[in-house]
Every structure is written in structure tokens, then in C-alpha cells.
Amino acid sequence: MAKKIILDCDPGHDDALAMTLAVANPAIDLLAVTTSAGNQTPDKTLNNAMRMLTLLQREDIPVASGNQTPLVKPLETAPEVHGETGLDGADLPDPDFAVQKMTAIELIAKTLRENDDQVTLVVTGPMTNAALFLRVYPDLARKKIDQIVFMGGAMGLGNWRPSVEFNIFVDPEAAKIVLNFGIPLVMAPLNVTHKAQIMKDEIEAVKEIKNPIGQAFYGLLSFFEQYHENPKWGFTGAPLHDPCTIAWLIDPTMFKTDKMNVDVETQGDLTRGETVCDCYRLTGKPVNTEVLLDIDRPRFIRLIMDSLKSFD
Ligand code: BDR
Ligand code: CA
Image (cartoon, rainbow, N blue to C red; front, side, top):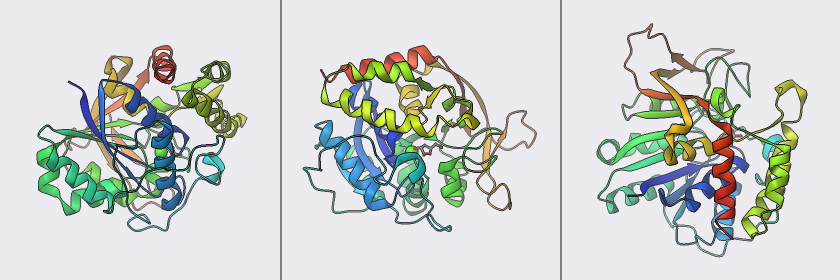
């Protein structure tokens, strides 16, 4: 049976690819999409999610917009990574369907109530909507969400501050609520997503996928790759962060993982938003997270190529 998921995202190039993997693969049943403020302002991330679902011809999937700002901090976006629209690099169709007349957390609640099965919440942006949902609907969450699979954080790395990853940086207080709530977590940190690179020649191979989705991703990935060319990163391609979440749900054997307690620093001048991963179990705090640490990159890229080709 297909795994039922709700995708809470801030598209974002890699969010858009995560959504596309979810739509393309029969192992996943994408029940709803909710959007958060993160890579761009909330109006833009909502519009991008709807433009992507229009491109994918999945206007039947309900979309709702969530938080306008993080819980405590002012919103900081990432136009240098994702451009002014949040999805620069391709001409995407304007949305040809209506947004739900409810908030993200209301759509999550409705979706969970309408489904007898348990549902996985996948978060590929800041955790603001997830935290709000857990605060407003804790019983429904405990009953109906089997796990929260998220891209965010790192063990000893950072891409926005020396030890802080962007999604957790944007809303550390929300991440703290989610990580300490008690629902099992699966975390795709920078340690694995930096290994999940798509190389330039592989982006050129996407150009040869002649359907509209392949053509759109050729433009999107070419744009996204440019930011990562700066030698400071030491990349040879572009890290596909968010698709790691969906790839793990489709085929967890692609990954090596370890289980540990993960919490979030919300106080430090230098470290606010750092995920603290207790890999040697020094704290005695409960093991709350399965952390993805390594990936079979060729298989991951094959999954992406096959998914894009499936729209032929
Ligand atoms: C995360 O930040 C965003 O820019 C990406 O979409 C990804 O979710 C990587 O740090
Ligand atoms: Ca994202």
C-alpha cells in the first residue's frame, strides 16, 4: 500500500523536486501540500507549490498556506539560493486551481481526520507549521501521525551559520517544539544531503528528458547549481537536500542511519538553531530520531531520473 504523506514545504528548488518525486512514485500517496515561509516569503512559496502542482497536473491535491512568520524570530529568506521568485530558472505555469480556504494546520487536521490510516508528515522547510499543528491539535497528531520526516539540521556542520542549517535557523523555537513532542522523527541533516549531490553532467542528462517536467527541472537545477559552484563549499555538483526525505520513504535501503536524541539550541549567540545530536548517548535523553548519515548516491540519482522520465 502506498505510504500516505502530507508535505509541508517552502518551494524552493529542492522542495519542488521532493514534491515531484512524491507525485511520480506509486509508493507515495501525496494527500495534501502545505506551505511555510522560508526560502521565500509565504505568498511566493504558496504560489510556487501551486505552480508546481499545475505543472505536474495534480491540481486535485489540496494546498493551504501556513505561517506568515516564524514563531519568535523575524523571517529571513534565501533569495541568493532560490532567486527572487523562490523558483528561479524555469517558466512555470500560473496556478490553474484555487488554494484551500483554510490554514495549513486546518488542512493537516482535515486530512488526518479523513484518513483511517496513519499519515507521515514530511517537512522540507522551517518547522513553524508543524509546531503550530502540534500545539493546536496534540491528540490528533499523536493518534494519526506515525512519523515526522524532515530535512533540517546537521551534526557539526552548517550552511547558514558555521553550525546551523537554514531550515532550523529560520525557526529554532518551532524545531524545538517538534523535536521534543514525542512523535518518532527521521532527520535528513546536511551530513547526508551534502552527499546527495547532482553533478553537472547529470543536470545535462536532465535536459534530454523532453517532457515538460524534465525541461522545467533542467532550468531549475541549472539555476540552483550555480549558487553551489562557490569553491568554499567544496561541491562538485548541487546538494539535493529535500528529496532525501521522499527518497527515504520510497527506499530506505538507499541510506545508512543511526538512532539518537536530537534537540535544538535556542539560546546561543553563535549557535541558535544548531541541532545537538547525541550520537554517543551522553545525555540519557530518549532516542527520538533516526538520522540519515550516508546515501547510495547513484541509486538516488537513478530514482530522480526515473521519476522525471515517468512523466513522458
Ligand atoms: C534547506 O534550506 C533550503 O534552502 C532548502 O530548500 C532546504 O530545505 C537546506 O538547508
Ligand atoms: Ca526547503
